[in-house]
Image 1 (cartoon, one colour):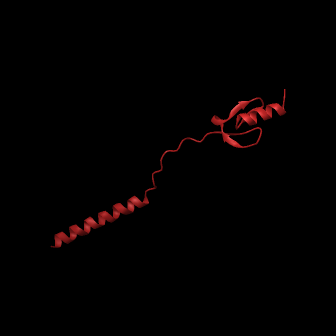
Image 2 (spheres, rainbow, N blue to C red):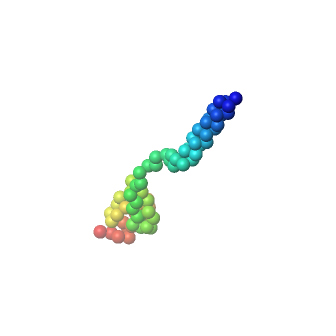
Image 3 (cartoon, rainbow, N blue to C red):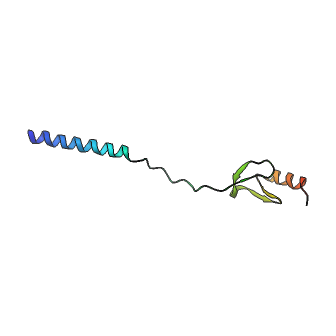
Length: 76
């Protein structure tokens, strides 16, 4: 009986230690995509990722309308 009680106490202690070790470990976060460089639209100033920007005369733009408006306002 005494052996069963000691065995039960050891199992309970191991179970508690396992739970506290799990709580102390920082949570695993999923890998995010690497940050993209940001650029500002030359017409409106909105910041957007460089891979989504449209290149044009005088800089980069958030859309075709802003690129056309900027190029019309700044002829070269």
